[in-house]
Length: 452
Image (cartoon, rainbow, N blue to C red; front, side, top):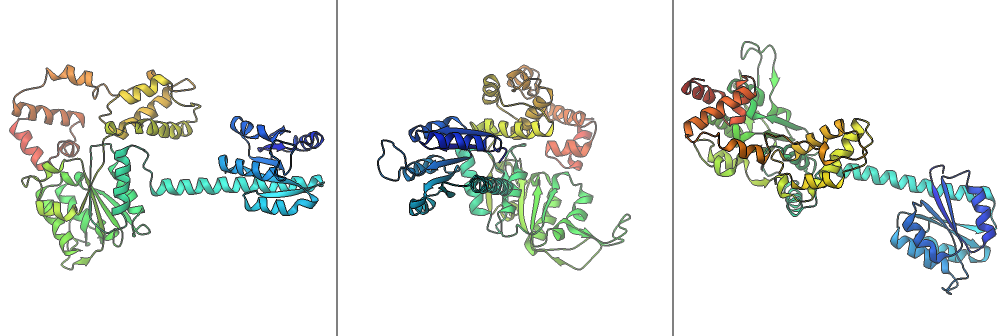
């Protein structure tokens, strides 16, 4: 009861005084009010956990049971507030009626103070229990569907997910980098019939030709030099569950042929073995490569596209989500203020305006990192526009400034893009190839061509 706020409404001034004296050392705050017509005005201004409400008043409402009227008014506008009714000994039938209308309990006057305290404590405990249940329910909902956003495009996305998730259809998730394709995949799994089974994610775009088969299909002891024991592949680990293949648009044609064979036959053959192993998986795939580019058979097999793309889900970029940027910003602010133990209450108006105007080429991921950096560096009680720093590389001004320096010759453009990717990753060919959408072998051929 120590943290509770209670409003006592009764036209008996002596009773109000006595109850306030009794409750003041027991609760956080006590409000008293003799006129029930001021009741809703008080609830609108103050945070109240429980109302102790008399059944009859000398008011303008002459029904003989005014308490029922005010009880209904409270529960209609503030359904979360608990109400305990005060009734005379001969009006217990009205108190029972009040319970049916939503009252938590009733107390008959005259009462013993211990009895009143016990009744109020029980009702407040009910408030705490309900709050806890609501938080657990909200947390469970967020875990099953952590998508944040009320924009029309996000409502469409959530509707589509709700339709396809309970099926076993193969789904291709498409969208720009940073839009949250991996989050969508997890949501689909959690809403599927396989939610209690394995969820296995593989970034296939980063697998080399030599690792592709051993990682996905497994191997037997002695299959190659370092194969010192049998090892299951990701397909077997995902058996009866969900397999998520991220960046599938970046795998080579040779890898595509291997993958297609497994998806058609629903069985894998580990390296070093001749015995096929049946697998039962629900396949989710994701790529940032537009479908029109995937449809080019010089890059991607059409028969594999049809196999992985029973249903296509397009994740919208952040710039198309309107006010969702504010909701996401507030979500990340709450998360990082807790993580870094900072006291930042929200955003200044200029910061919100800056969030709304920025185009976020890095999408939700860029917003997340920007808010994290702002929380770490901010020294104020709210984030200001000056706290929000976006990458100058991604800004429109920087893009315009660099436009004049861009080569016009296609070969020179390709050479410069390759050189920049290699420099960006300090010579790491695998990462550079992944960014460029090439295999390592293809990148090496181009490096040789351009003498890089």
